[in-house]
Image (cartoon, rainbow over all chains, first blue to last red; front, side, top):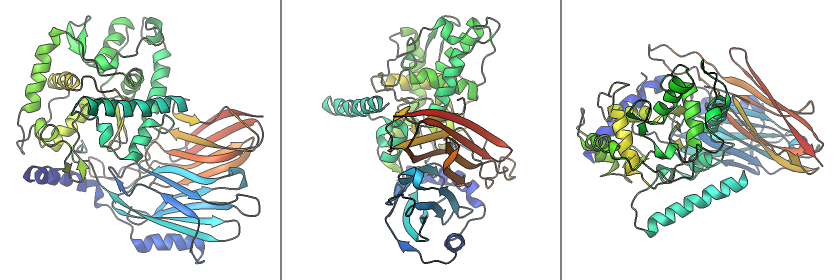
Length: 148
Length: 254
Length: 106
């Protein structure tokens, strides 16, 4: 126990160095979401936000957003927006989709500065806005590299 | 590609069950990662290390140096299989043991008559990644060469030696406390089966030497000078310690 | 393809929904990290990725500094006719990479 606490403190001291810059807040995330929706009601829809609940490193977190949609000309997902709560800025990505995609499933890898909530907002061709949220616990490796 | 992936999954399962069956207490660091990272490593279309392997393949086939030779001109296709799993090894040209990066540079200076590539440079990492990738799925096979014994013994001494501000040795964590948590992360047994690795912390590919320096900084030990012989001793010891575990280069690690 | 890796099937059946994966080497420097001298390392990211199928844009991704280094993206497309899929990454410091693959649809 003493050993791990000491090494943790040593590692944490180094780890805290880059994370002193400005941070967004949950309010910033909600404001960024409102910019996209124009204040329209957000509903829970057939949206799955697939992200590990606990990650070994916040630098590269795999994320998949899947939406059940017929993806026809009349009824399809137009855009998928993803936001975060505690990174320095609230945006993660905006994906533009359409009937040519066949499936509204987008995967990428994101950076998370800290344990926080991620929100996906899906815009459909019918003007609907659906949302899904997920909480991610971000841990760090115990032995880091100094910044030179 | 799917067949390769299936094979790799089965290989992983095979190794795990083999280890259990024979009572081998050793675990690859791959097994200490969560499923999302394991998936990232196993999928060649998603493993960021594969960008370096692709660039390394181009470099492998490109002519270099005043001898105007490509690696491929001397080394037949498929001849690199199992090579990375056998390093560090004794090099004829220098009469000294070298790691894989050192071996590549010896080829460059002695056979291609080109300049050695800088340590941790993109060019060296690409070639190392390409060569190491050819050993993926092979068991780590340190050479049965008694000339390496003193080096391995020195490595073992360093491994067990308490040093630095916290008075820890490598063995304090990786032998005595492997499997337990340190700051939310699982302490691995530290078998270097996957080098060069794409370490998420670095957001790029890096060598075992870079990782060993990270360890020393984390332990609050002044790291050895960049060209110090201690790194090679530790590498030689660690690869002997990992003998028989399956090479999974280029690995993804947190 | 020195800096990018594209995974797309070489052939597909008409109407089949295929997965395309794209990976590219790029530091995705956020612009929020201090360097060794204490000063912020300037932002250097890819801002946009897009895919065109025979000239028609079928997917686009606007990236922020929150996208991980060496960005990876996977998306789906309906294979409706044979053609060329062109990929384009653009971003800070006039970053521009274009790659393409051919897909035969029967």
